[in-house]
Length: 398
Image (cartoon, rainbow, N blue to C red; front, top):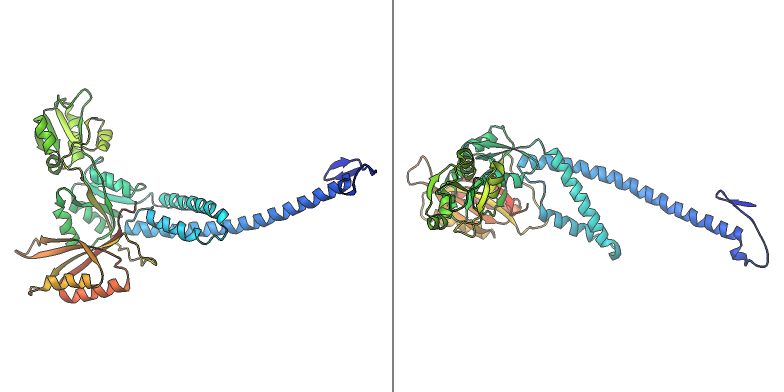
């Protein structure tokens, strides 16, 4: 008898077995094969230990990223950055056969990193104006799904809450593609101390909301924010509704709920219907089909990260006043253009305390956090009476 790895084998040596196929030889061959497998597995274990240490180190870096994003009011996810990271890292794989597997592996690592950042940022507080279900609430929830949202009665109160340190960030509307800029917010950007670090274009669709049992035909009066009423004026006139203005669309939905009246309807979002337990009586009733308000997230710290590779979606915001000299505005705008920046928005806004005096608001494409950007700001400082860099952001990175 011969025992090989705990298995008893009868050794029979006869002319019937070629030497290489005798039981004792097969056992020795199998033992050698298992030894090779053990060696490979040992190497894999060593690699896994190194990967575990690197994974732990990477997650510690994620802790710093989470702190950075919280301080600046940035979202956890940045789709463009994630695509860039995967493409760059996957290019380091020399074996094409495993390249796609590494990309999948890296995607999972990024997802875990973002999940960890989300947990770390759960204590974050973000201000918005209005009540739960309002469009500002929806925008804030999309920008900061992990944060606790805090409602304030108006734009100024929400803005100054961040300045005082009561909350970490604030989400405010910049403009609407249908109705234009939000004047109060423009004034806050000029006079305040917060910085824009994130902007979201929020595609919205107005709906007619009502109580259970109501229909568009039973409704006689609709309530909503004045801007929403204007955006749905054709629908309102076609049905012959009376109108009542409210501070925001969510408050209008709350009014309908509290009234419990089949003749009363609200123009608001489907999310507001869910919040206040209303039925959606009719969808997509807005006259304007490109109803896209833009919301900005502002915080006390400016994002000054200088990117290694130029991103096409980089933008920055300036507000300034010019000297009361002929051609001073043109000179200012020429400086911006001379440094290769494309202005996508230019607005003037009356200054509150000075009659017939204006400040200017500019949004431009390109990175301001570069040597070129700093040189431009230095030149502008010499020509502008007041100059403030309100912030920089990546377009629609959520």
